[in-house]
Length: 130
Image (cartoon, rainbow, N blue to C red):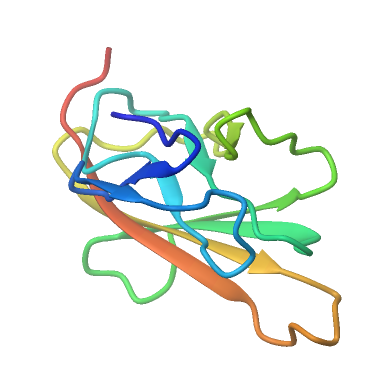
């Protein structure tokens, strides 16, 4: 999976496009990409300015409700030089090889000027567990 760098980001399909990673109105998931080689993949995303926490949800392909949910405080997340934050897989249960998933990260803020959470989503599949 290619990683975002200053001025260049990658869509879930791997296509490069110009972006500003620290932009307050651009929230995107950097990894995982469409194909994952670990059943416990690292997660990374461009942080949202003003977010105080992120709710990370993983949905099985046919599920309406998430099968896994974790909350991560924004305070301890330090963006890389490329402008994104990275965390280890936050759930005790590994993902199943060959099964499609949707990752949703919701940035939440106590700021009255941002009353609605900002959400980014990506679809992926674990193709191997190395």
